[in-house]
Image (cartoon, rainbow, N blue to C red; front, side, top):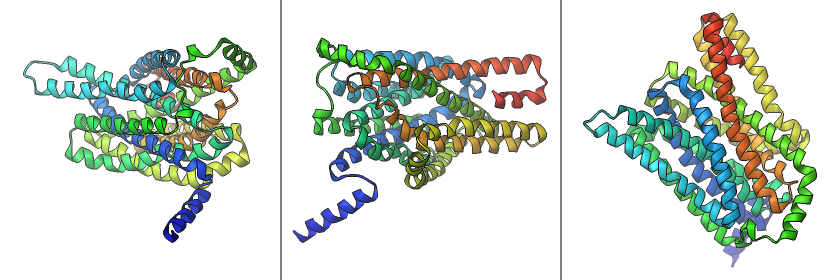
Length: 426
């Protein structure tokens, strides 16, 4: 009895330290475990697919991936939203990731087959690498939607302010564990087998979500949206009508934030490709992600919640576009003044990428789900799917078009010495 009482007292102290109430602890821990596990798998898959893509295609073809990713992403978001109409929400969020993991298993197997075959299958291998990189981007969109929708179903607006910063820390822990473990994996496994391992870890994370949905069935409706009676739907629509402009602003803000990240990512990977090759790229990305994850965790624990509380939600999320924009302009000026020092561009973009991810996965991630709380519960998951998911996918196409147009202008109308300068400013 004394041991049980002591354990209970320790548990209460830990929950108070992380600003949680006893009734929120189990839900938060399971959501954290789900998000962290799937994100570790995605980290391994993403970094390995980037290395394969850069090796086969080069960074100059990344805009094609962005545009194709926009088309696939928007299509998947509409399918995800449509599935919520004909299947219970629990079925949709639990089955989405395992179904999408199937290509991650088939494509690396196809790559291994083409490598081992005697006939010339290089075109098939190239196509498999392209599809693999494309599918990983789509997986990130669905995983983010699953996490935010599940959190909004499990917690009310008061609870989510306390719990979601801890849930969103899952991806930060994944950056540390997945990042630092990746160089070791690459040392013993080929990249296609690292991708298969990551796919299995994603499935493991989904099993945690399945357990969560069974443990808290009241949070996940077994009724499809089509079975909601007409009065409920009509009332939800009347409530959502004044909020349409608010939802539209969320859409454009999400598009801007995601487009900035992709433009920075393109420049960063371009410089990385010109400096490293093959598995060295994977190892660099892994170590970078691990170091970044440590800083993200420290920011999440000691800075993020205090900044949001003191500065406010909207001022805090504005730090990302304003800060990254100012740093890009500064880097453009420095690269123009010291054009002979190519290393300045590499480490400058690495620093900007670092700060972009740091702010994105702490300040912005903590406020993203909270911004959808004013939307009525009856339609919140669908609005969140369409507004958040489509904005993220459309931003990829928008960024890809900007890069292609900028490359064309730089190649045809500007001196070679101005090429990097124009691309950075874009």
